[in-house]
Length: 545
Image 1 (cartoon, rainbow, N blue to C red):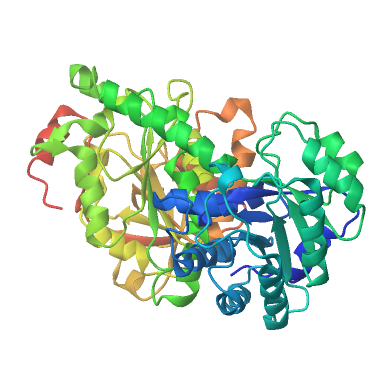
Image 2: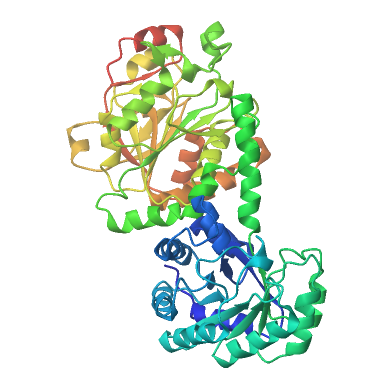
């Protein structure tokens, strides 16, 4: 539950007595309540009509008061602004009302409004002039019982006068309001079904300022707010419009989906799933998992750079990028994703570019580099880093054209340093074959001694003298949660220069080294395959990850 600087009951009492006209808006579940608060409203109206409607039943006390309480509990937990419940007639006798007050206070509800009609109630806009009103003395006793039952002095009870609805006129409305005020009501809600505000204005003029007056301009909606403000009303309730708007949207959307039998014209016009997750508070759960679940922080995410075409493969990549070429009956990207999944790395962010719509392996998170023709790997990496936001776990960067054994990922996870790379010590065959590669200069060569001491990367390059080379960088970079912010800063600095838009990951790694960061080297021999040629693609069919 959200913590606030003031009690919700005190905040609602402030709305009634602020001396200015205030506004609250209807909500009918936790999600709509959160939207009302985020929009800027200082309070929420727990509407009896809309809470009933979201259950698909009539506004005739067909929902039990325990069902209403359950809905209110979710609404209260989701928000920090005060809620006033539309409590109908109080759900029975004075004794039922006393229990209701206790239950509302337990759930952090700030106020309740009850109306002087007979239980079970009927909505005021359905043949209102035929509806009987409660006995004035019995209803006054109910208000007194509620005030005596409340434990919080700031809890508010608002008495709703239905005299105009029932056709009994101004005199009866004033008489009832006076009795309810004397019984302890903190405010009077004067209700009218007319399309003009004449009845409520006449009431307010006669009533003056004996206590706050609340109105619900559902029927006389065309009246300007200045009229209500000039009359001195304390609180305006926008009573049912979020539910009504959602009905229109759902009907239109359902009809369109049914008629078109696809989602193409719908998806861009509805809230994204990410927005649903945000409103649900998914990020808070993610943070809590890091604090409370053993090992929850240790599962890294992976960024797979796959924006290039792979022109060296010729016509094989005319209609799809290299990452989607089939190896042993499934796309190369599927093999890579499965290897990550085997070690528990489930969050995979793939950067697409060339023929991006063809990159559609299910279950992956996609980011697009639409400038892939004119930019290099670092622009793609920056897109993924920006997408990840403030990462609280390790990140592994790799390429979409490299098959590898899962043990390489275990090697990357072991060291606790902020930056780790894997270097293949068996590099001479690639060098002798004339393959392009990123050669690594390290603090010491691979040897028995390298197993007991930390080896650090000194430089990567594709044109290094053979005598200085200690291995071939395999295209993997592990970045810790702390190192993630360092990488973000370095990317921003490098890419701020228009002449460096074509830079690659080795350029980033070299910059990290130049800036004084230590990059740990883990030596290995083989067990990976960089797919650059048709011959590599043939070999990939026999690769055992």
